[in-house]
Each structure stands twice: as structure tokens, then as C-alpha cells.
Amino acid sequence: MAKSLKPDAFFQTPGVILDVRSPGEYAQGHIPGSVNFPLFNNDERALVGTCYKQKGKDQAVELGLAIVGPKLANFVARAKVLAPERQVRIHCWRGGMRSAAVGWLLETAGFNVALLIGGYKGFRRWALSLFSIPQKMIILGGMTGSGKTEILTALENIGEQVLDLEALANHRGSSFGALGQLPQPTNEQFWNAIAMEWAKFDRSQVLWVEAESKRIGMCCIPQEIFEQMERAKVIEISRSRQERVAFLVEIYGEADINDLIAATERIRRRLGGLRTQEAINFLREGNLAAASDLILYYYDKTYTYDLEKRGVSIHKVDVSGLSAVDAAVLVREKSQEI
Image 1 (spheres, rainbow, N blue to C red):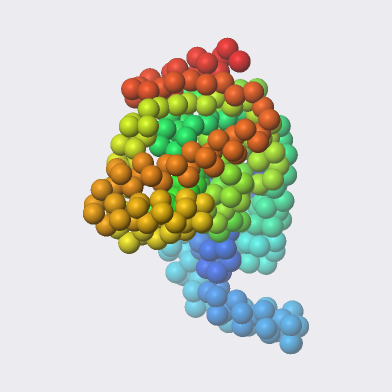
Image 2: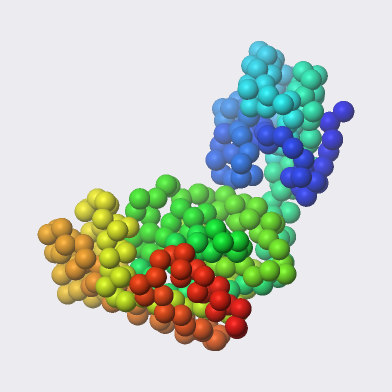
């Protein structure tokens, strides 16, 4: 018989996670790593929902059975491909009829089945409850082009706990941050991804997080986590301006010139009309280094203001000339002193 499990136990159980909601529901937000295994497609779900409202539960169930009946063999065949070991975890929206129906089918076909109590809705309650859990934290600050993300990656590689919010948001957190990135997730999915990471962290150990504004592109950091970030100690790295410009050229050197110009236009008001036009002229000439040097004026001013506004002690570390790995070792040593 299928096991019904709360989120913590559900995630400790082996097997692929099958999300049996419609593709539209899945696109809006889903458990990271789950596979969409829809009982109904978007149109079919709408038909069943309309039938339920107009004619009641019994006729909606009959319609659903008529739609699903011809698909049963295909469901089993696909499940065998996704879970050759015959272990599956299943959920729908509220842990109701859809997950129960697919669970019954796959169990009949010889699968070991675990169902998520409360479905995706239950998962969301669990996920949102995690954000208020206190976590020891150090913020890695540094001006644009300092290589903070690369240092975070190096810290993780030497055994430190890291939450890379920009990676989860598919955005580097500036007007240029979407260039070369995959489309951003919905904010709901961004929070889902954070929750799955947050659940893994050791509360007694330091978590490294890059200094961020509340919004990363179109994604917003959960308020409870952002408040913890604002209270955390800050280690601010610095590099020479020449290194920073070279770093930006390396990151954005392959970007489309029109995308770079559009991103520059978005900061015109704060960069100033003259600097903006000069930067755009440099971009059109193919001189990304000169354009980057001008644009850093805006980002340096903004960064300094945001960091000083935190009102916490800031510990400075010069990593000029160091690789990301050597810089990571240095900032870790600094963290043990503060």
C-alpha cells in the first residue's frame, strides 16, 4: 500500500518525484528536481474543473475517468522509463484524487509508491516555514567585478556552506545581469529552490551569501532571509579597478552589442546622460573595457551606499592578484578571526 508522508520524510525516501499536476501548474512552481507527469493536460484540467463547478463531483469524476482511461498504459510505460528501480514519489496540488489515482495505478503495476501529504500546497507551507529558521551567516561583499560569485564557488569547493542566490535566480543582480543567462524562474519557483537549499544547511556552521539587493532581476529574496542577511557580518573583498574591468570584459565580452546598449540605457538616469552616451559610444566601437570603466562609476556609488546602510561591522580583505581559490582561502581565514 502507498505510504503517505510529510515533506521531511517524503524527501528522505528514494525515488523520482512525479508531479501529476497539469503542465501549467508545474510551470508556475514545482518541487526542484521533480518531473511533470500530468494526469491531465491544461485543456483537460480546465474541462474537468468546469464540469465540477457546473455539474458536480460525480460527473467530473466520470469525465476524468473517460479522459484518463486511454492513457493508463502510457502512464505505466513512461513511469518504467523514469523509475527503472520501481521507486516513485507522487504528489498533486493538495494530495487528493489525482495523486491517489496515479499512485494506485503505479502500485498495481508493481511500483513502490510514496505520496506527499498535502501535495504541492503542503510542500509550499513547509518551504515557507523554513525561511524564519535562524542561520549563522557571513555576507561576502565587494564592488562589481570583484569576482564574488567565483569566490563563493571556490568556498563551496573547499567545504564551506554557500547559498548562491544569483545562480538560483538565473541573474547576476544588475542591469546587465540577465545577459547570457537562462530565463528567470517565477518568484514562486525561486523560493522553492531556496527552500530546498535552506533545508540542507547545518545551523551551527557559517553560511556564505553574496551581498544582494532585495530584488535579483525579477526575483525577490524572501523577507525572513533578507532580514538575516542585513544583520549578518560582512567581509568585503577588494580588487584593483584594472582587474575588475578585465573581469567584466571576460563575462560580457560575448554579449550582443544591442543587449549591452539596452542595459546601459536602463541606468541612464543614475549614470548621467553624458557618461551613458560615452559608454554607448565605446560599446559601438567595440571598446568594452572603456565602457565598463565608465559604468563602474554608477555601480561603485550604488554599492557603497547599500553597504553602508546595513549598519554592521565590515571586515575588509584585499584579494588583488589572487585567484578565486586563493581568495576563498583568505576570506575563510578572515571569517575565523571575526
